Image 1 (tube, rainbow, N blue to C red):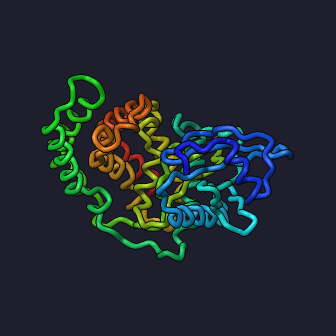
Image 2 (tube, rainbow, N blue to C red):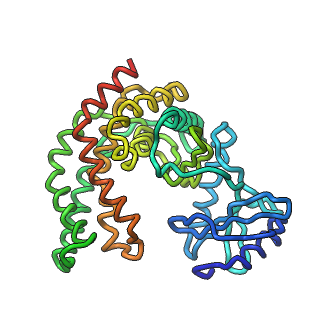
Length: 346
């Protein structure tokens, strides 16, 4: 398909394969790899249309949509997928492949951070999500070594590779690329201390089928309620505590609310446990340590200037700096956060 399908092509496939006659089609929120549109039919109903670039693994996308549908059937607020006239979740015609779902109106992403009742709402929603996905036919929850969740050895190899590439072609002084090279060097030097801190994690953590990409852009909020969970990945086992920490300890939340994120974390974990009592308390207590360790072991987005320079935007650069700063805050206040969780979980 073309790199940028136009609204005419999108309108055509909606009419042909979905029996949706659009009154208007406009570009929607940008996706990481997809190009998105919002269509309004003649009855005033709106639809979210995702178009996939060439080379997309369409079977994986179908599995991801099916995972979202399974969560929806369990009561998680996931937008309903609109099927084609032949019952497919993805339609292809004229080199264009799309999926269509209900449009979630009057909602915002969680990128602005959590506050107030949102802590409880998000914790409860993720708990319900994990409780539902624990019964997924791909397989039940299972223990995995904590070192697989925060893999210090792999982080070291990745950072060494980045630094070797920068040594061969040093970045120009100043700017984001030079910052990435400097932070990668600092992060590599800090890994022995990170490894020592991660020794306090339980020997094993619980891995299960999870959303897979539960980042702030994929959680839609309406006031203090969760309006929708979107953009699932194909079923795969990962640490449930890691996924909970990824969303409730988003760097932007931690930095924007220095006085609130620890009590907010406790509220989110309490709500999560009420919705999903099966996850061991030891996993929940480990949430902030996993979050800090994961950030410390991550090469993203330090790798982007080398691996995918076209993705570099002011927003990504700001997010990269926020991730680094938030990791420092999490380590500095880790014991305080864990003590708050002990009080909640006892």
